[in-house]
Image (cartoon, rainbow, N blue to C red; front, side, top):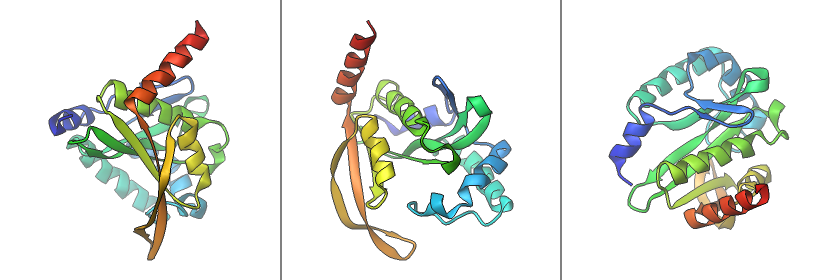
Length: 200
């Protein structure tokens, strides 16, 4: 996998769709929807960033993200829940290891939409894009150890738990243990074959 391909793909972020979702670029029209969840303590408890203090901060953040998209250096989609025509979170790649053909994914979801299978649906679509369009061999995800809800999402899309990295990150002044889950291309393909066989 070459850096140039990633920059080319993500500087014109493709829109992805599922049965209920549209994954698209974040933009300034998302200020209200993003601030609604990004300002909540229960959302930011297990992430590296603090709650957004006001809508102006969210607006500035989205403006900055627009410049990163243009440079092909931001790999996250806004999740739009079509039944409500609402941006309810984000899902995408946080980093790439170009030499190893691997990537890390991350996500966040408005708590008002927890329990609906939305993140499983979004993450499944992002994994599909990673393996089939980007040609990745491995995709991993990480979570702060206490965040079992996030681990459950990872395992629900076929990722395998690999272990815990002790005091692997400094988050908001505290060292935290980080769990790692991953899925390989061959595992993904087998999963798709099984799904196809069930529908035939």
